[in-house]
Image 1 (cartoon, rainbow, N blue to C red):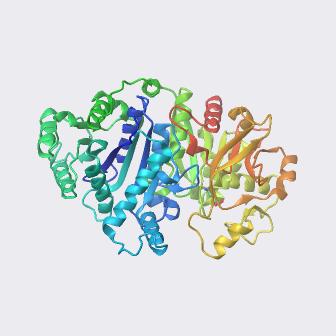
Image 2: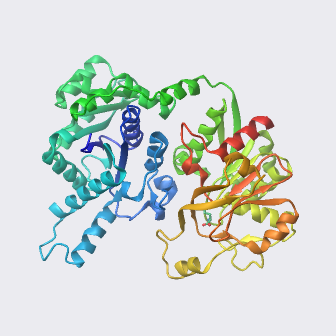
Amino acid sequence: MSKTKYIFVIGGVLSGVGKGVTAASIGRILKNRGFNVSVIKIDPYINIDAGTMNPLEHGEVFVTEDGDETDQDLGNYERFLETNIYSYNYMTTGRVYMNVIEKERSMFYKGRCVQVVPHIPMEVISRIKTAAQKTKAEIMIIEIGGTVGEYENILFLEAARMMKLDAPDDVAFVLVSYMPVPSHLGEMKTKPTQHAARTLNNSGIQADFIVARGKDELDKPRREKLAFFCWLRSQDDVIAAPDVPSIYEIPLVLEKQKFAGLLMKRLKIRPRQLIDKRWDNFVAKMKKVKKSVKIAVVGKYFATGEYTLSDSYISVINAVKHAAWHNGVNAEMTWLDSEDYEKNPEKVKELGGYDALIVPGGFGTRGIEGIIAAIKYVRENDLPYLGLCYGMQLATIEFARHVLKLKDAHTVECDPKSKNLIININNTQADNIKNERYGGTMRLGAYDCDLTPGSIAHQLYGADKISERHRHRYEFDNKYKAEMEKKDMVFSGINPQSDLVEIIELKKHPYFVGVQFHPEFKSRFLEPHPLFVGLVKAAIKNK
Ligand code: GLN
């Protein structure tokens, strides 16, 4: 297959129904047939990247290998497709406009009037094609953010329409919509989706398929109705996607309705059979898991309710689950607010009721004394610990305060006047802050790390050299290294180019590991991350 085929995934009715997971699942069922599949996410906001947005409102910032700060959906793509997604797989309105404006300034348009239409959609198309080329994708899935009928994504829909007109057999449209069940009626309604399909028609786009999200399965009359009123070719083109216990089951739900076959037919791709059954097999295994371990996660940000919370740390949650399933257990995760430990120091003892603790990444001062108290508790009580980024930084501060007796030990982020800045700032970062250059200026993306032979990290990775993704501004100050080593802290991961500390661990502890990077970004459903596996194994032992 030489030409790339394009599948646009568009949302209808309301957001938050799992458009990203649907896009990723479509990718998976095609990948299972041996196609080279890649994915593009289009976000309609003006921001250049997701790095400057509040994770509580917008969910996690997912970091790519090449250091782009993107939308959390890209994490799902990587987890589902077992492939790396790069900066060119992601675009925002801001990026598109910035490029067009820069090109205009450099006379790229040779004196023509540069207009919203066609120049913006043309830029979008050029980006889509570049990504297809770079990834060598046979099938490129493009998720357009937002829902139909909004102003914000109109120009992206226009780009999609233009691509379809140009090559009708190479482009397919999937409308992911929602079937509400009003409580006073108790039955599923198709009308909102009918409206969404019509609104899509107004943009010159006819849906080829409708993925009907909802609480339950679709019955026959509703399938008929949707196919008829949304002008689909056949009832088979309506794919039911009812709620399932785990998102990882969705590819199987789509497969059962022969969605891959229908897509291949619509795109005139020579049909291929399902050959890679690893995904389906592991889902079956996952569903049989009965036992569980209890993992506490301590941080700030947690007082805002379950929904936003799980969005802010979605990669961490998934990494823990992957590692747990691969070790035959479920992970029961509990979110504990560190500010509670500041108000009531005795409360930290509740951690004794869990099998392990994670402190995830974070920023700023709020709640950190409570986090430090939690780390002290697990260090002294031999409870397995994994600190991610801020979780590593705060572990070194806790150690400096209570083992080295440096009472004022701190991070420059919270107390720049402290005499013992265990976590400090380098010149470039100081300069960035001084000049208010916040966007895209942290240490971002993949960096090498050498592992110390014999360390926990070395054993778990089974390698001398690794590479992991970063997103932080501050670093461990090497002047405290020797003192800490004397007290049995091991610096088991060092950046070979800059000598920066990337991994710390403790000798006399069952599992106490802190990492300056974010291992959660590289964990996949079929391939759990070694450090999370280490934590889960220690948690099982601790039970
Ligand atoms: N706030 C810390 C820093 O910027 C840690 C960042 C993080 O946890 N991602 O260095």
